[in-house]
Length: 69
Image 1 (tube, rainbow, N blue to C red):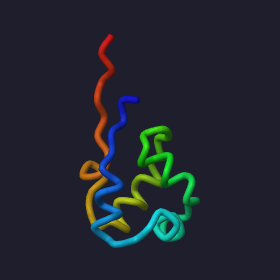
Image 2: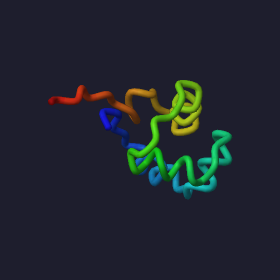
Image 3: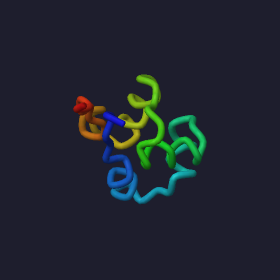
Image 4: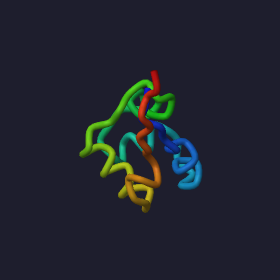
């Protein structure tokens, strides 16, 4: 998947678990887990909410890398 993220390290810096971060951004613990594993790309709205809660920009958490074939 070309969308990479550093969500786990930002969440750890805040000292919250997946459940609490999910509650703060209006998502489930499972969604946060899927994002951290790279198995789910969040909507723009969710990415913005996550960045706001973490106190950083979206680009600090998420980066897009072109797939090479």
